[in-house]
Image (tube, rainbow, N blue to C red; front, side):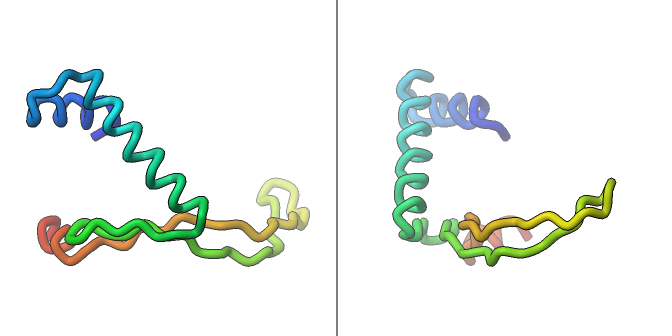
Length: 90
């Protein structure tokens, strides 16, 4: 499912217009992004948790040339599925 398919499903399920559903999806994504930028985690009970983790700086190799490349430390986004989501999928 992509973003447009999600918007169509939300509009159909709620009876809202696709425009309103698109605004809702965009607002949700912006809210999650803003919270993760601040370092907060976002939890949807039963669905899962979005959180950030720190990745250390490391040295990697270019597979074509074999040259060493320095990769700086950075934040990575992690998602941990909730119990209800795990059981629904399995």
